[in-house]
Length: 366
Length: 73
Image 1 (spheres, each protein chain N blue to C red):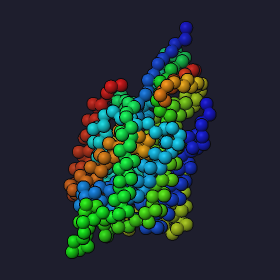
Image 2: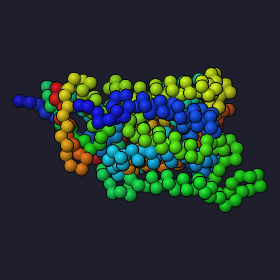
Image 3: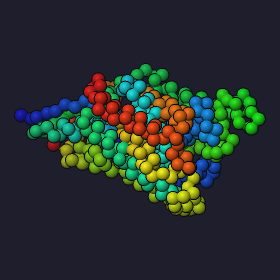
Image 4: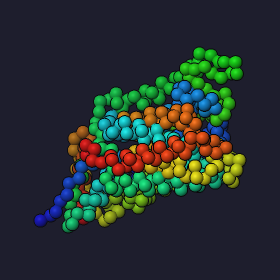
């Protein structure tokens, strides 16, 4: 049976991979933090900070890329009649999975997208993170093979599918109008929306550029069903390499772009926003990989699904926001100095939760 | 007599739709699998998987975005 379009065909994800590989380093060139053209985890954490859910002053900003990803995906879905409000697949469990996935990612300092982009920037610390990610996905696949399921979603009424897009537009308005009650003596914003004056949260490409990149990536990723976790997972489940080609394309394109822009700096030390301890990176990404696999996709995919009207993915994203807040408030996040005081505790609890869920979530309304 | 199997993958997250079809293919002597789907991505993945295993697929459009994939060995 022929595919209806090139983007949905076998080689579609390559287009998305190349687009991300070109555009993400470009965002870095125009102001985003090092090797962070797109990081769904870091950006969601920055968003949590902007909303005041954590008070880590260096990471507070409403990232337009996330807004673009939701709306770009929604546009693609509407154009091809794939916008379908749906919900009901164990949402509270997805919330929890989002939270623990974020906790793991914030130890490594990146989601799978950023792991690939860090690698493409010469940050060899990302290698162990990707190995950890694959390990977590492997464990998740074993649970899936033994009957793990979060159950079926069901078609829902329109508002279920519209909350995320409306939330995205609301965030865009808050970003543009920089809603603030004022600043304190040191120049820190007082809320209700926080904007970092130093650190990664203060490093950002121009709003219009970041938004445009998000829209393009969101559109292409929705059409091509792009998913960085699915790329590894599908090879393990059926040997299907469709999504894998996409992340390889991303890696190649991003490396080339970084070389072109003078952003390729190979090595282990002195890497931007890079956690150096191998064990912490491995275990953090193992937790993330496991949680993303149990939830059906990488954090980018969850954003694109939410643009399609998937209310369960929207809940996963809310869980990620909560997880970011927990991570920073409880000192679980990593840094360039190494893991945080409670990073391993957070990973341990997160893994325990995933393992319990892996064994107990079966045959839910299936 | 043709041995048929029925699989309902409506509303399931990746990669469960493909996994359920994969399981159905292992049923002793099965020759036709009817898959009920409500999602375009699931359909694409199932079609690609079935054809990669040498099965043929035909699509029967239904109502409300629900359709049936008939997969034959």
